Image 1: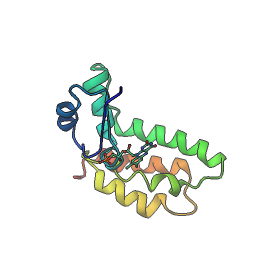
Image 2: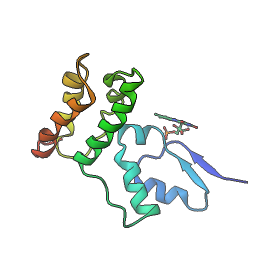
Image 3: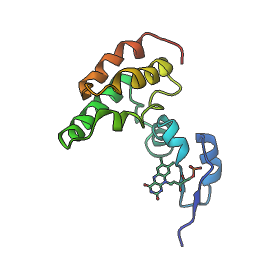
Image 4: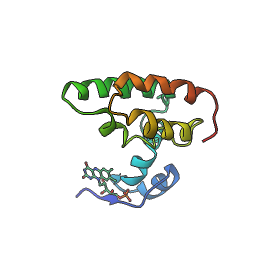
Length: 127
Ligand SMILES: Cc1cc2nc3c(=O)[nH]c(=O)nc-3n(C[C@H](O)[C@H](O)[C@H](O)COP(=O)(O)O)c2cc1C
C-alpha cells in the first residue's frame, strides 16, 4: 500500500520531517504561493547538484510557455495571474507582482512583454 500525506505542509523542514516513512507528500497551496519551494525540494531531496534557476531564466521559461499558449489563443493574463508568487522571497518580488497586475494584465501585452520586468528583478528592490 502507498502512504501519502496530503496537505498542510508549507516548508522544506515540514516536508522533511513529515515525509519520513511515507511514500510521498502532496503539496498544493504552498507550491502555488511560492513555487520556489519546488526548486528547493528538487535540490534537497532529489538532486543536490541541481541549481535553483535565476529570475531571468524563470522569465525565459514563462515567455516560452506563454508563446505556446498564445498560439492556442490563450491570453497572457490568464497565465500570469497565477504567477504572482513566482519571485516570492527574492529581491523584486513586490515589483514583480505590481508588474503582473499593471503591465502584463493589459490586453495588448504579449509574452515578450515579460522581458521588461527583468530590470526590476535585478535592481535589488526589496520584496
Ligand atoms: C493550485 C493547486 C493545484 C492542485 N492541483 C492538483 C492536481 O492537479 N491533482 C491533484 O490530485 N491535486 C491537486 N491539488 C490538490 C493538492 O495536491 C492537495 O491535495 C492539497 O492541496 C494539499 O493541501 P495543501 O494545499 O495544504 O498543501 C492542487 C492544489 C492546489 C492548491
